[in-house]
Length: 151
Length: 134
Length: 331
View 1 (spheres, chains in turn yellow, red, cyan):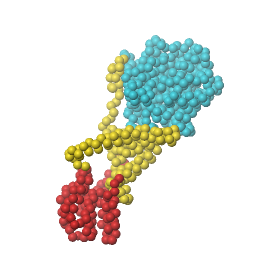
View 2 (tube, one colour):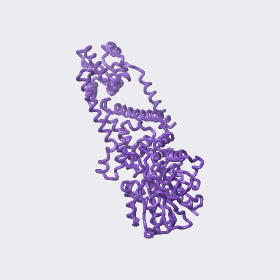
View 3 (tube, chains in turn brown, green, orange):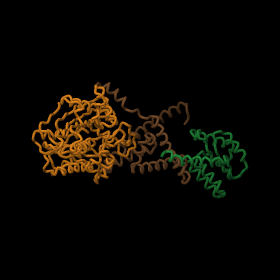
């Protein structure tokens, strides 16, 4: 059988990913995670001295704490299998990427194992986040200098 | 079905939350001398959803909540409002904030009927808080 | 080229142990033991993997009533870097050893080598088999275990299991190896590590076809042709290839796949099971037992392996695959 012919067969047999279902599930779970995040920040604003500007830090820390608990008990991968991008895109997904790598490499010691591999998955998120932030800021700076928009 | 079971209590609590917000949209606390005037200024702005104004001595704390879709421009609208009040009351020390925390605390002050001597400290603290950055 | 064994070495005994999730396998009642702890009370996944290999070998030896000093050779492999679990198990077993790597096809390539050693008279008893441990393999080939990524429907689940068989001189009461085919490395341009069944099916097809041709046999000569870990999509593709080559689909009844059946219809495992331990566990428990019970008289075992590394697919290489086959008969 020729390669081309086989590719044809392969495409006939392989089911298409259920895009619509995946998007709907990601929307629901992602929205749920963000709603919980909103509730956490309201909690911090109501009971502690945080404003809308400063509440981000403790909220993110708390959400990552939740992600840590779920990852440690092996539940986050189950949520991830169901939700896809819905649980990967919020900050809990970033936390999960870091924490799962830390758990995984604990057996190779603290320095070379956990330390060396902590950002195995999340490293590129950090890198490209910083790089894109730099370029966005640069574009805005140019636009402001030209007088198109204001800060 | 499992998902629905998770979502249901959430939806119910959300609808309850929005239910209590409908009472009063404009509240002034403190000396009522220019209540009408302030209300007029605020009502002019269609992006303002709810406000609580606290007046004492020669200062004024204007805590506003901006309508949901206008929140994108929150910082700009806050500045715009501040400018308006500064022009209208050049002799007064006006502080405008669109922050939820300030609004929440202002309502608390009103609800608890804080006495004048304590009020000053409280407002001072709120102003400091509002200027804090991440 | 097909290898025909004049002396017909026999599979004297098989030892299979598996991890906790494998209790859900439809083959689990055929395994010698399943454990609740996938690390076998060891500190690391890799140490647990080693322990698992040792226990499978112990079971095989115990059934045959022999000790490790009675074994002449130990042939085996796994999927971890440099095959340390099997290498370290060989250290503790203290038997002359060659580590073999054909990815998931190691379960059969090891038996072929052991049979050749028996054929030339170098070995009276040899241990041959393969193993895989889910956590140790996944962390190497894909993501950390607890990372919440969404696996597509085409993905397969690496099983935690070790299967080893004792290959000895011909005995009528045991299944005997009549012939073997060593497969080529076949590449049909598939490059998705989450769709291994599609990459491996052509290799299985070529090996089965060349074995049948050179042995002058047809599919109906076999009671069972069992592939290792093509998964539910892979076996469909393999059958599709046979249909396109002109064989009627009714004739394909003997064709089954261990990976597709391993976890039953459980959707948690997507397209089914994979890993060197999958084929080894089914071949050296279920198949040997069924043959000794007389259910099957002539069986072709085809283990398929995807010869990729985490580096190769990141560098954009396609996935070459191989398949090795042995023909087993029972009087």
